[in-house]
Image 1 (cartoon, rainbow, N blue to C red):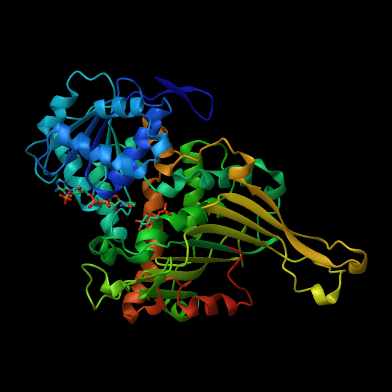
Image 2 (image 1 turned 180 degrees about the horizontal axis):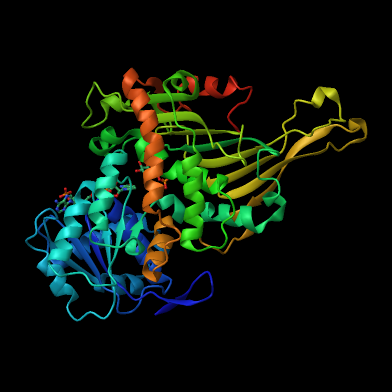
Length: 497
Ligand SMILES: NC(=O)C1=CN([C@@H]2O[C@H](COP(=O)(O)OP(=O)(O)OC[C@H]3O[C@@H](n4cnc5c(N)ncnc54)[C@H](OP(=O)(O)O)[C@@H]3O)[C@@H](O)[C@H]2O)C=CC1
Ligand SMILES: O=C1O[C@H](COP(=O)(O)O)[C@@H](O)[C@H](O)[C@H]1O
Protein backbone atom coordinates (compact mmCIF):
# COMPACT_ATOMS: atom_id res chain seq x y z
CA UNK A 1 0.00 0.00 0.00
CA UNK A 2 1.29 3.48 -0.69
CA UNK A 3 0.55 6.60 1.24
CA UNK A 4 1.42 10.13 0.15
CA UNK A 5 4.18 11.89 2.04
CA UNK A 6 4.75 15.58 2.79
CA UNK A 7 6.58 15.93 -0.48
CA UNK A 8 3.77 14.28 -2.39
CA UNK A 9 5.83 11.15 -3.15
CA UNK A 10 4.15 7.84 -2.56
CA UNK A 11 5.65 5.89 0.35
CA UNK A 12 5.18 2.23 1.04
CA UNK A 13 3.43 1.47 4.33
CA UNK A 14 3.47 -2.31 4.03
CA UNK A 15 5.16 -3.64 7.15
CA UNK A 16 4.93 -6.33 9.81
CA UNK A 17 5.12 -5.04 13.39
CA UNK A 18 6.70 -6.92 16.31
CA UNK A 19 5.69 -5.21 19.54
CA UNK A 20 7.84 -5.98 22.60
CA UNK A 21 6.00 -5.23 25.85
CA UNK A 22 2.61 -5.79 24.23
CA UNK A 23 0.81 -6.23 27.56
CA UNK A 24 2.34 -3.13 29.14
CA UNK A 25 0.73 0.19 29.90
CA UNK A 26 1.92 2.08 26.83
CA UNK A 27 1.03 -0.69 24.40
CA UNK A 28 -2.44 -1.23 25.79
CA UNK A 29 -3.31 2.42 26.40
CA UNK A 30 -1.71 4.06 23.37
CA UNK A 31 -0.15 1.76 20.78
CA UNK A 32 -2.99 -0.67 20.06
CA UNK A 33 -5.56 2.16 19.94
CA UNK A 34 -3.28 4.08 17.55
CA UNK A 35 -2.84 1.02 15.31
CA UNK A 36 -6.60 0.47 15.38
CA UNK A 37 -7.20 4.04 14.23
CA UNK A 38 -4.70 3.62 11.39
CA UNK A 39 -6.58 0.50 10.32
CA UNK A 40 -9.86 2.37 10.54
CA UNK A 41 -8.48 5.15 8.36
CA UNK A 42 -7.39 2.58 5.75
CA UNK A 43 -3.69 3.22 6.48
CA UNK A 44 -2.71 -0.31 7.48
CA UNK A 45 -1.98 -2.54 4.55
CA UNK A 46 -4.29 -5.53 4.21
CA UNK A 47 -1.26 -7.87 4.64
CA UNK A 48 0.19 -6.15 7.72
CA UNK A 49 0.59 -8.51 10.69
CA UNK A 50 1.03 -7.53 14.33
CA UNK A 51 3.01 -9.76 16.67
CA UNK A 52 2.63 -9.13 20.41
CA UNK A 53 5.54 -10.24 22.61
CA UNK A 54 5.47 -10.35 26.39
CA UNK A 55 6.45 -12.47 29.37
CA UNK A 56 3.04 -13.94 30.22
CA UNK A 57 1.91 -17.36 28.95
CA UNK A 58 -1.08 -16.59 26.74
CA UNK A 59 -2.47 -18.15 23.63
CA UNK A 60 -3.37 -16.00 20.64
CA UNK A 61 -7.06 -15.95 21.55
CA UNK A 62 -6.42 -14.81 25.11
CA UNK A 63 -4.12 -12.09 23.76
CA UNK A 64 -6.84 -10.90 21.39
CA UNK A 65 -9.26 -10.72 24.31
CA UNK A 66 -6.77 -8.48 26.17
CA UNK A 67 -6.29 -6.21 23.18
CA UNK A 68 -10.03 -5.99 22.52
CA UNK A 69 -10.60 -4.98 26.16
CA UNK A 70 -7.90 -2.30 25.83
CA UNK A 71 -9.53 -0.96 22.68
CA UNK A 72 -12.94 -0.87 24.37
CA UNK A 73 -11.41 1.17 27.17
CA UNK A 74 -9.29 3.54 25.13
CA UNK A 75 -11.15 4.06 21.86
CA UNK A 76 -14.42 6.00 21.80
CA UNK A 77 -17.40 3.65 21.40
CA UNK A 78 -18.59 5.43 18.24
CA UNK A 79 -15.15 4.92 16.65
CA UNK A 80 -14.94 1.21 17.48
CA UNK A 81 -16.40 0.02 14.21
CA UNK A 82 -17.20 -3.73 14.47
CA UNK A 83 -15.96 -4.65 11.01
CA UNK A 84 -12.67 -2.85 11.57
CA UNK A 85 -12.33 -4.43 15.01
CA UNK A 86 -12.74 -7.90 13.50
CA UNK A 87 -10.18 -7.13 10.78
CA UNK A 88 -7.78 -5.64 13.32
CA UNK A 89 -7.96 -8.56 15.75
CA UNK A 90 -7.38 -10.98 12.88
CA UNK A 91 -3.95 -9.39 12.33
CA UNK A 92 -2.78 -10.22 15.86
CA UNK A 93 -0.48 -13.02 16.91
CA UNK A 94 1.28 -13.58 20.21
CA UNK A 95 4.49 -15.21 21.46
CA UNK A 96 5.62 -15.56 25.05
CA UNK A 97 9.25 -14.50 25.44
CA UNK A 98 11.71 -13.45 28.15
CA UNK A 99 13.33 -10.54 26.32
CA UNK A 100 16.58 -10.81 28.24
CA UNK A 101 17.26 -14.43 27.17
CA UNK A 102 18.44 -15.51 23.71
CA UNK A 103 16.23 -18.60 23.77
CA UNK A 104 12.91 -18.01 22.16
CA UNK A 105 13.95 -15.41 19.56
CA UNK A 106 13.86 -18.08 16.88
CA UNK A 107 10.07 -17.71 17.11
CA UNK A 108 10.43 -14.23 15.61
CA UNK A 109 12.60 -15.50 12.77
CA UNK A 110 10.03 -18.23 12.09
CA UNK A 111 7.20 -15.68 12.15
CA UNK A 112 9.07 -13.65 9.57
CA UNK A 113 10.06 -16.50 7.26
CA UNK A 114 8.99 -15.71 3.72
CA UNK A 115 7.32 -12.44 4.74
CA UNK A 116 7.57 -9.94 1.91
CA UNK A 117 7.37 -6.80 4.06
CA UNK A 118 9.95 -5.01 6.21
CA UNK A 119 9.68 -5.62 9.94
CA UNK A 120 9.21 -2.75 12.38
CA UNK A 121 10.30 -3.70 15.90
CA UNK A 122 8.73 -1.53 18.58
CA UNK A 123 10.46 -1.70 21.98
CA UNK A 124 7.76 -0.67 24.45
CA UNK A 125 9.88 -1.76 27.41
CA UNK A 126 12.40 -0.18 29.78
CA UNK A 127 15.47 1.16 27.96
CA UNK A 128 17.83 -1.12 29.90
CA UNK A 129 16.48 -4.02 27.79
CA UNK A 130 17.08 -2.38 24.40
CA UNK A 131 20.64 -3.69 24.01
CA UNK A 132 19.76 -7.31 24.86
CA UNK A 133 16.76 -7.31 22.55
CA UNK A 134 18.70 -5.90 19.60
CA UNK A 135 21.54 -8.40 20.10
CA UNK A 136 19.19 -11.39 20.39
CA UNK A 137 17.21 -10.32 17.35
CA UNK A 138 20.37 -10.15 15.29
CA UNK A 139 21.86 -13.37 16.64
CA UNK A 140 18.64 -15.27 15.95
CA UNK A 141 18.67 -14.18 12.29
CA UNK A 142 15.35 -12.36 12.65
CA UNK A 143 16.57 -9.13 11.01
CA UNK A 144 17.30 -8.08 7.47
CA UNK A 145 18.54 -4.94 5.74
CA UNK A 146 15.14 -3.32 5.97
CA UNK A 147 14.27 -3.97 9.62
CA UNK A 148 13.60 -0.78 11.64
CA UNK A 149 13.61 -0.36 15.39
CA UNK A 150 11.48 2.06 17.40
CA UNK A 151 12.63 2.93 20.92
CA UNK A 152 10.84 4.81 23.65
CA UNK A 153 12.11 7.54 25.95
CA UNK A 154 13.79 8.14 28.28
CA UNK A 155 16.93 6.59 26.80
CA UNK A 156 19.08 6.15 29.85
CA UNK A 157 19.44 7.97 33.07
CA UNK A 158 22.21 10.38 32.13
CA UNK A 159 24.62 10.99 29.26
CA UNK A 160 26.84 8.00 30.07
CA UNK A 161 24.02 5.44 30.36
CA UNK A 162 22.29 6.86 27.31
CA UNK A 163 25.51 6.55 25.25
CA UNK A 164 25.83 2.93 26.35
CA UNK A 165 22.27 2.12 25.26
CA UNK A 166 22.66 4.00 21.98
CA UNK A 167 25.91 2.12 21.30
CA UNK A 168 24.14 -1.21 21.86
CA UNK A 169 21.29 -0.30 19.49
CA UNK A 170 23.75 1.19 17.01
CA UNK A 171 25.82 -2.01 16.95
CA UNK A 172 22.83 -3.72 15.29
CA UNK A 173 20.91 -0.97 13.47
CA UNK A 174 22.28 1.97 11.46
CA UNK A 175 21.02 5.41 12.55
CA UNK A 176 18.83 5.58 9.42
CA UNK A 177 16.76 2.65 10.77
CA UNK A 178 16.51 3.79 14.42
CA UNK A 179 13.35 5.69 15.35
CA UNK A 180 13.66 7.32 18.78
CA UNK A 181 10.23 8.34 19.93
CA UNK A 182 9.39 11.55 21.67
CA UNK A 183 5.64 11.39 21.45
CA UNK A 184 5.33 15.19 21.75
CA UNK A 185 6.73 15.39 18.22
CA UNK A 186 3.75 13.35 17.05
CA UNK A 187 1.20 15.82 18.40
CA UNK A 188 -0.46 17.78 15.62
CA UNK A 189 -0.12 21.02 17.54
CA UNK A 190 3.60 20.49 18.06
CA UNK A 191 4.10 19.92 14.33
CA UNK A 192 2.10 23.07 13.84
CA UNK A 193 4.93 25.02 15.46
CA UNK A 194 6.94 24.35 12.31
CA UNK A 195 4.10 25.53 10.09
CA UNK A 196 3.39 28.56 12.24
CA UNK A 197 7.00 29.71 12.33
CA UNK A 198 8.16 28.90 8.84
CA UNK A 199 5.04 29.34 6.72
CA UNK A 200 4.06 32.77 8.12
CA UNK A 201 6.40 35.64 7.30
CA UNK A 202 4.52 37.69 9.92
CA UNK A 203 6.16 35.62 12.65
CA UNK A 204 9.34 34.71 10.79
CA UNK A 205 10.56 38.33 10.80
CA UNK A 206 9.75 38.90 14.49
CA UNK A 207 11.18 35.70 15.88
CA UNK A 208 14.28 36.91 17.69
CA UNK A 209 15.60 38.87 20.64
CA UNK A 210 14.81 42.22 18.98
CA UNK A 211 11.09 41.54 19.22
CA UNK A 212 10.58 38.82 21.82
CA UNK A 213 11.19 39.56 25.49
CA UNK A 214 10.70 36.08 26.92
CA UNK A 215 9.18 32.65 26.30
CA UNK A 216 7.14 30.52 28.69
CA UNK A 217 6.51 26.80 28.34
CA UNK A 218 4.12 25.07 30.72
CA UNK A 219 3.43 21.34 30.58
CA UNK A 220 1.11 20.71 33.52
CA UNK A 221 -0.34 17.28 34.24
CA UNK A 222 -3.36 16.60 36.39
CA UNK A 223 -2.42 12.97 36.95
CA UNK A 224 -0.09 11.76 39.70
CA UNK A 225 2.13 8.73 39.39
CA UNK A 226 -0.59 6.34 38.16
CA UNK A 227 0.98 3.14 39.45
CA UNK A 228 4.38 3.93 37.90
CA UNK A 229 6.14 4.84 41.17
CA UNK A 230 9.02 2.40 40.66
CA UNK A 231 9.89 3.85 37.27
CA UNK A 232 9.13 7.44 38.16
CA UNK A 233 11.04 7.57 41.40
CA UNK A 234 14.27 6.68 39.59
CA UNK A 235 13.58 9.30 36.96
CA UNK A 236 11.78 12.35 38.38
CA UNK A 237 10.15 15.08 36.35
CA UNK A 238 13.43 16.40 34.90
CA UNK A 239 14.35 13.09 33.26
CA UNK A 240 10.75 12.05 32.54
CA UNK A 241 9.54 15.27 30.92
CA UNK A 242 12.19 18.00 30.57
CA UNK A 243 15.05 15.99 29.05
CA UNK A 244 12.80 15.03 26.18
CA UNK A 245 9.40 16.71 25.70
CA UNK A 246 10.14 20.20 27.03
CA UNK A 247 13.54 20.41 25.37
CA UNK A 248 12.00 19.34 22.06
CA UNK A 249 9.52 22.20 22.44
CA UNK A 250 12.38 24.60 23.21
CA UNK A 251 14.12 23.37 20.05
CA UNK A 252 11.10 23.90 17.84
CA UNK A 253 10.60 27.41 19.20
CA UNK A 254 14.25 28.44 19.15
CA UNK A 255 15.72 26.73 16.08
CA UNK A 256 16.76 28.56 12.94
CA UNK A 257 14.79 27.81 9.77
CA UNK A 258 15.90 24.48 8.30
CA UNK A 259 16.87 24.51 4.63
CA UNK A 260 14.03 22.07 3.91
CA UNK A 261 11.80 19.61 5.73
CA UNK A 262 14.20 16.68 5.52
CA UNK A 263 14.79 14.85 8.77
CA UNK A 264 18.45 15.81 9.05
CA UNK A 265 17.88 19.43 8.06
CA UNK A 266 15.43 19.79 10.96
CA UNK A 267 17.51 17.76 13.38
CA UNK A 268 20.70 19.68 12.58
CA UNK A 269 18.94 22.91 13.59
CA UNK A 270 17.55 21.38 16.77
CA UNK A 271 21.00 20.18 17.79
CA UNK A 272 22.37 23.72 17.43
CA UNK A 273 19.79 24.89 19.97
CA UNK A 274 20.64 22.11 22.41
CA UNK A 275 24.33 22.94 22.11
CA UNK A 276 23.57 26.60 22.81
CA UNK A 277 21.63 25.95 26.04
CA UNK A 278 23.45 27.57 28.91
CA UNK A 279 24.63 24.90 31.36
CA UNK A 280 23.53 25.17 34.98
CA UNK A 281 25.97 26.12 37.70
CA UNK A 282 25.58 25.80 41.43
CA UNK A 283 24.86 29.51 41.98
CA UNK A 284 21.84 29.31 39.62
CA UNK A 285 20.05 26.70 41.73
CA UNK A 286 18.27 28.85 44.30
CA UNK A 287 17.51 31.57 41.79
CA UNK A 288 16.71 29.92 38.47
CA UNK A 289 15.51 26.43 39.35
CA UNK A 290 12.75 25.18 41.65
CA UNK A 291 12.16 21.51 42.40
CA UNK A 292 8.91 20.40 43.97
CA UNK A 293 7.21 17.26 45.26
CA UNK A 294 3.45 17.09 45.78
CA UNK A 295 1.88 16.44 49.14
CA UNK A 296 -1.74 15.41 49.76
CA UNK A 297 -4.32 17.72 48.25
CA UNK A 298 -7.31 17.62 45.95
CA UNK A 299 -7.83 16.73 42.34
CA UNK A 300 -11.21 17.04 40.64
CA UNK A 301 -12.80 17.72 44.01
CA UNK A 302 -11.45 14.51 45.59
CA UNK A 303 -8.72 14.09 48.18
CA UNK A 304 -5.60 12.53 46.72
CA UNK A 305 -2.47 11.26 48.51
CA UNK A 306 0.91 12.92 48.45
CA UNK A 307 3.76 11.47 46.40
CA UNK A 308 5.27 9.78 49.44
CA UNK A 309 1.96 8.04 50.20
CA UNK A 310 1.37 6.65 46.72
CA UNK A 311 1.35 2.85 46.27
CA UNK A 312 4.88 1.46 46.46
CA UNK A 313 6.36 4.71 47.74
CA UNK A 314 9.53 5.11 49.71
CA UNK A 315 9.01 7.67 52.42
CA UNK A 316 12.51 9.09 52.09
CA UNK A 317 12.39 9.91 48.40
CA UNK A 318 13.73 13.29 47.27
CA UNK A 319 12.55 12.78 43.70
CA UNK A 320 10.95 15.85 42.12
CA UNK A 321 7.43 15.72 40.67
CA UNK A 322 7.65 19.37 39.61
CA UNK A 323 10.38 21.49 38.15
CA UNK A 324 10.46 25.12 37.06
CA UNK A 325 13.49 26.73 35.56
CA UNK A 326 14.78 29.73 33.73
CA UNK A 327 17.20 28.99 30.95
CA UNK A 328 18.89 30.76 28.07
CA UNK A 329 19.68 29.82 24.49
CA UNK A 330 23.02 31.53 24.20
CA UNK A 331 23.19 32.56 20.55
CA UNK A 332 22.60 35.66 18.40
CA UNK A 333 18.90 35.03 17.88
CA UNK A 334 18.07 34.58 21.56
CA UNK A 335 20.70 36.50 23.52
CA UNK A 336 19.10 37.90 26.69
CA UNK A 337 15.72 36.19 26.15
CA UNK A 338 14.85 33.97 29.12
CA UNK A 339 12.99 30.74 28.49
CA UNK A 340 10.88 29.90 31.56
CA UNK A 341 9.90 26.23 31.72
CA UNK A 342 7.68 24.46 34.21
CA UNK A 343 6.19 21.01 34.36
CA UNK A 344 4.64 18.99 37.15
CA UNK A 345 2.33 16.19 38.16
CA UNK A 346 -0.87 16.71 40.17
CA UNK A 347 -1.41 20.23 38.97
CA UNK A 348 -4.92 21.72 38.79
CA UNK A 349 -5.40 20.82 35.15
CA UNK A 350 -3.81 19.22 32.13
CA UNK A 351 -2.35 22.02 30.09
CA UNK A 352 0.51 22.25 27.61
CA UNK A 353 1.02 25.76 26.44
CA UNK A 354 3.73 27.98 24.99
CA UNK A 355 3.51 31.75 25.40
CA UNK A 356 5.72 34.02 23.31
CA UNK A 357 5.87 37.47 24.91
CA UNK A 358 6.71 40.23 22.47
CA UNK A 359 8.49 43.41 23.52
CA UNK A 360 6.68 46.68 24.20
CA UNK A 361 6.61 49.37 21.50
CA UNK A 362 9.81 51.43 21.60
CA UNK A 363 7.81 54.70 21.80
CA UNK A 364 4.47 54.80 23.62
CA UNK A 365 1.77 57.36 22.71
CA UNK A 366 -1.33 56.19 24.60
CA UNK A 367 -2.70 56.93 28.06
CA UNK A 368 0.25 56.68 30.50
CA UNK A 369 -2.06 54.89 32.97
CA UNK A 370 -2.34 52.04 30.48
CA UNK A 371 1.36 51.70 29.92
CA UNK A 372 1.40 48.54 32.00
CA UNK A 373 -1.06 46.82 29.66
CA UNK A 374 0.50 43.72 28.41
CA UNK A 375 2.41 43.73 25.14
CA UNK A 376 1.48 41.30 22.37
CA UNK A 377 1.58 37.64 23.25
CA UNK A 378 1.28 34.60 21.08
CA UNK A 379 -0.38 31.82 23.07
CA UNK A 380 0.06 28.40 21.50
CA UNK A 381 -2.20 25.89 23.17
CA UNK A 382 -0.83 22.40 22.53
CA UNK A 383 -3.40 20.49 24.58
CA UNK A 384 -6.26 20.35 25.38
CA UNK A 385 -8.48 22.78 23.41
CA UNK A 386 -5.79 23.08 20.78
CA UNK A 387 -5.46 26.49 19.21
CA UNK A 388 -3.46 29.66 18.76
CA UNK A 389 -4.34 33.08 20.14
CA UNK A 390 -2.54 36.32 19.40
CA UNK A 391 -3.21 38.81 22.19
CA UNK A 392 -3.41 42.29 20.66
CA UNK A 393 -4.37 45.72 21.96
CA UNK A 394 -7.31 47.38 20.23
CA UNK A 395 -9.33 50.51 20.91
CA UNK A 396 -11.97 50.10 23.56
CA UNK A 397 -15.37 50.84 21.95
CA UNK A 398 -17.67 53.59 23.20
CA UNK A 399 -17.99 57.36 22.95
CA UNK A 400 -16.70 57.81 26.47
CA UNK A 401 -13.57 55.71 25.94
CA UNK A 402 -11.44 58.08 23.82
CA UNK A 403 -8.31 56.20 22.75
CA UNK A 404 -8.45 53.75 25.65
CA UNK A 405 -6.88 50.41 24.84
CA UNK A 406 -8.32 46.98 25.42
CA UNK A 407 -6.44 43.67 25.23
CA UNK A 408 -8.17 40.89 23.32
CA UNK A 409 -7.32 37.73 21.39
CA UNK A 410 -7.27 36.97 17.69
CA UNK A 411 -8.14 33.39 18.21
CA UNK A 412 -7.81 30.27 16.09
CA UNK A 413 -9.54 27.43 17.89
CA UNK A 414 -8.75 24.27 15.91
CA UNK A 415 -11.93 22.41 16.87
CA UNK A 416 -14.24 25.20 15.68
CA UNK A 417 -12.08 26.28 12.72
CA UNK A 418 -11.75 22.72 11.41
CA UNK A 419 -14.80 21.01 12.96
CA UNK A 420 -14.78 17.86 10.84
CA UNK A 421 -11.12 17.07 11.42
CA UNK A 422 -10.34 14.52 14.11
CA UNK A 423 -7.05 15.39 15.79
CA UNK A 424 -5.13 12.10 15.67
CA UNK A 425 -3.24 10.91 18.71
CA UNK A 426 0.53 11.45 18.57
CA UNK A 427 1.21 7.71 18.33
CA UNK A 428 -0.93 7.38 15.20
CA UNK A 429 1.20 9.94 13.39
CA UNK A 430 4.45 8.45 14.67
CA UNK A 431 3.56 4.86 13.79
CA UNK A 432 2.54 5.99 10.32
CA UNK A 433 5.86 7.79 9.82
CA UNK A 434 7.80 4.69 10.90
CA UNK A 435 5.83 2.62 8.41
CA UNK A 436 6.66 5.12 5.69
CA UNK A 437 10.31 5.08 6.74
CA UNK A 438 10.40 8.82 7.47
CA UNK A 439 12.49 10.07 10.37
CA UNK A 440 11.76 13.80 10.62
CA UNK A 441 9.55 13.35 13.71
CA UNK A 442 12.10 11.17 15.49
CA UNK A 443 15.04 12.14 17.62
CA UNK A 444 18.59 11.62 16.41
CA UNK A 445 21.26 10.25 18.74
CA UNK A 446 23.12 13.56 19.10
CA UNK A 447 19.88 15.34 20.12
CA UNK A 448 19.35 12.85 22.94
CA UNK A 449 22.93 13.22 24.07
CA UNK A 450 23.11 17.03 24.02
CA UNK A 451 19.83 17.09 25.96
CA UNK A 452 21.37 14.77 28.56
CA UNK A 453 24.55 16.82 28.73
CA UNK A 454 22.49 19.88 29.72
CA UNK A 455 20.31 17.95 32.19
CA UNK A 456 23.41 16.36 33.71
CA UNK A 457 24.74 19.83 34.55
CA UNK A 458 21.60 20.44 36.60
CA UNK A 459 21.51 16.99 38.17
CA UNK A 460 25.14 17.37 39.25
CA UNK A 461 24.36 20.69 40.93
CA UNK A 462 21.30 19.17 42.66
CA UNK A 463 23.24 16.18 43.86
CA UNK A 464 25.91 18.41 45.36
CA UNK A 465 23.26 20.14 47.44
CA UNK A 466 21.13 17.07 48.22
CA UNK A 467 18.15 19.29 49.15
CA UNK A 468 14.63 18.06 49.68
CA UNK A 469 12.28 19.32 46.99
CA UNK A 470 9.83 22.03 48.04
CA UNK A 471 6.38 20.76 48.94
CA UNK A 472 3.25 21.75 47.01
CA UNK A 473 -0.29 20.53 47.58
CA UNK A 474 -1.74 18.29 44.88
CA UNK A 475 -4.08 20.42 42.82
CA UNK A 476 -1.91 23.55 42.98
CA UNK A 477 0.39 25.18 40.41
CA UNK A 478 3.53 24.04 42.20
CA UNK A 479 5.67 25.51 44.98
CA UNK A 480 5.25 29.26 45.57
CA UNK A 481 8.97 29.59 44.89
CA UNK A 482 8.22 28.87 41.21
CA UNK A 483 6.12 32.03 41.15
CA UNK A 484 8.84 33.98 42.92
CA UNK A 485 11.35 32.68 40.36
CA UNK A 486 9.60 34.54 37.54
CA UNK A 487 8.37 37.56 39.54
CA UNK A 488 11.97 38.37 40.51
CA UNK A 489 12.33 39.31 36.83
CA UNK A 490 9.19 41.51 36.95
CA UNK A 491 7.11 38.90 35.07
CA UNK A 492 4.43 36.35 35.86
CA UNK A 493 3.26 33.01 34.50
CA UNK A 494 0.52 33.56 31.95
CA UNK A 495 -2.69 32.62 33.68
CA UNK A 496 -5.53 32.88 31.21
CA UNK A 497 -6.22 29.15 31.33
N1 LIG B 1 3.42 4.32 29.93
C1 LIG B 1 3.60 5.54 29.42
O1 LIG B 1 2.72 6.41 29.48
C2 LIG B 1 4.88 5.89 28.75
C3 LIG B 1 5.90 4.96 28.62
N2 LIG B 1 7.05 5.31 27.95
C4 LIG B 1 8.12 4.34 27.77
O2 LIG B 1 7.58 3.19 27.13
C5 LIG B 1 8.23 2.01 27.56
C6 LIG B 1 7.18 1.05 28.13
O3 LIG B 1 6.55 1.67 29.23
P1 LIG B 1 5.29 1.03 29.96
O4 LIG B 1 4.37 0.43 28.98
O5 LIG B 1 4.79 2.06 30.88
O6 LIG B 1 5.97 -0.12 30.82
P2 LIG B 1 5.27 -1.40 31.42
O7 LIG B 1 6.14 -1.87 32.53
O8 LIG B 1 3.84 -1.17 31.68
O9 LIG B 1 5.36 -2.43 30.21
C7 LIG B 1 6.51 -3.13 29.88
C8 LIG B 1 6.11 -4.52 29.47
O10 LIG B 1 7.28 -5.24 29.16
C9 LIG B 1 7.26 -6.50 29.84
N3 LIG B 1 8.59 -6.93 30.21
C10 LIG B 1 9.47 -6.31 31.01
N4 LIG B 1 10.61 -7.02 31.08
C11 LIG B 1 10.41 -8.12 30.32
C12 LIG B 1 11.22 -9.25 29.98
N5 LIG B 1 12.46 -9.41 30.45
N6 LIG B 1 10.70 -10.18 29.18
C13 LIG B 1 9.46 -10.08 28.72
N7 LIG B 1 8.64 -9.02 28.99
C14 LIG B 1 9.12 -8.06 29.77
C15 LIG B 1 6.46 -6.24 31.09
O11 LIG B 1 5.95 -7.46 31.51
P3 LIG B 1 5.65 -7.73 33.05
O12 LIG B 1 4.45 -6.89 33.34
O13 LIG B 1 5.43 -9.17 33.07
O14 LIG B 1 6.87 -7.28 33.81
C16 LIG B 1 5.39 -5.27 30.57
O15 LIG B 1 4.31 -5.96 30.00
C17 LIG B 1 9.27 2.47 28.60
O16 LIG B 1 10.51 2.68 27.93
C18 LIG B 1 8.72 3.82 29.07
O17 LIG B 1 9.75 4.67 29.54
C19 LIG B 1 7.20 6.54 27.37
C20 LIG B 1 6.21 7.48 27.48
C21 LIG B 1 5.00 7.26 28.20
O1 LIG C 1 6.33 10.67 28.44
C1 LIG C 1 5.53 10.92 29.31
O2 LIG C 1 4.48 11.70 29.01
C2 LIG C 1 3.30 11.70 29.82
C3 LIG C 1 2.53 12.96 29.43
O3 LIG C 1 2.16 12.88 28.08
P1 LIG C 1 0.87 13.65 27.54
O4 LIG C 1 0.84 13.32 26.09
O5 LIG C 1 -0.30 13.11 28.32
O6 LIG C 1 1.08 15.10 27.81
C4 LIG C 1 3.66 11.68 31.29
O7 LIG C 1 2.48 11.55 32.07
C5 LIG C 1 4.58 10.52 31.58
O8 LIG C 1 4.97 10.55 32.94
C6 LIG C 1 5.81 10.60 30.71
O9 LIG C 1 6.59 9.42 30.86
